[in-house]
Image 1: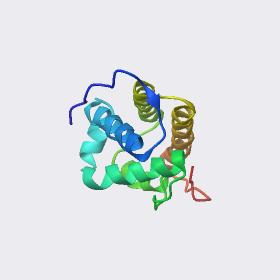
Image 2: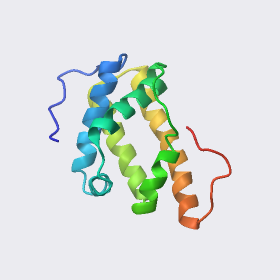
Image 3: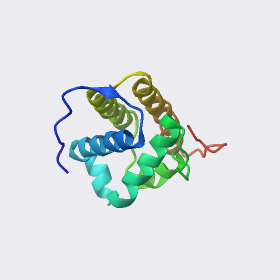
Image 4: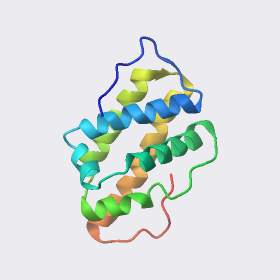
Length: 143
């Protein structure tokens, strides 16, 4: 995936098509990233499944549009089983997400997108730390 040029002007993040663009651009950056790309390559991600699922997730979280089904934190357990990751990878994920949001969008929902990503990363960080120590979460972790 190559990263297309950013639009000349940032706009308010307000509809599903924009969320889809955000998700596409973010994952284009992720797969090219030297730290995160190998994890996704190693997991043999089916982008035809993953991208629509992530669009549904972010449309639900940012726009209140139902559609996402699943446990977003628990979904990372198979990744941790094969490619243990931690703070450095989550910090890089947040950095790329924030850069992508700020490159494309402005306004309250864009700010919320960054805030929600920090919440999600915090929950995944807890799972990763528990995984590293061999402890199981006592409750389902859902940001």
